[in-house]
Image (cartoon, rainbow, N blue to C red; front, side, top):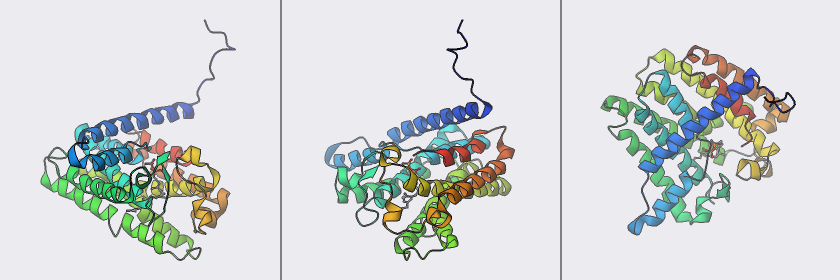
Length: 312
Ligand code: GRG
């Protein structure tokens, strides 16, 4: 029998919930990585270099939060796992393409991503551009496949929603605002708008994908959209906080860049404490929004707090 001195400290309810969420995130990450491994080209022939770069970008690491959201929201509407996995792989392909392109010398010019040299550093610039292009194209190819859903209408709805989220009125639009924004002169509403597009749009797709695959009603879709908006925003606020409070070792990417460029962020506007408070407030609201889903997917309500407390 263990003596009380050697007994590990009992986990509180929150700790247990936190570990359950971490286990669920890990499980989702492994599942989507297996699916991507199946879907990505195996390096061969004259195209081997681009195939290798695609695999390098995808398997460099990453938290796989967006695939987790696709898989978890799919569970709400009893979407078969194999279908949800394809949509999860598609969103991770789009997300990874955006990181590869964002790191290019003509954009953010970063050398480190997911703790490894960026694709243009590990390979070369041309290969990095084409890797992003290939991943973007692959995502739509995956969604168009019959294994994603037997109904062509549902597949088209998914494709249209992803095109909207990733395109000029979504992530690309946000990136344009970010690149062209007059430094420091952005006000809070403009930063929120920019980030809602740049970071939030893919979160919105990730949360809605399950509802589209499950042909859920508008009420559920709206609830998930509103949850996604809050977590997209708190995710970005946390990203801004990590840029000033964390290190490259922990985040796996360069830090201190926003301040170095005189870029207006949530932290430059709210201050560190104000930004933390704002993120925490959004986390509470997001968790409340998905309470009705607690029985089927309790992880959804746990995720917001986890995302504001993340260290990378
Ligand atoms: C260049 C097409 C193009 C788009 C750029 C999303 C984006 C738009 C750029 C990424 C740069 C960036 C730092 C965005 C802020 C928040 C964010 C999306 C961080 C990275 O996402 P994580 O933390 O990354 O989920 P991992 O590596 O865990 O997948």
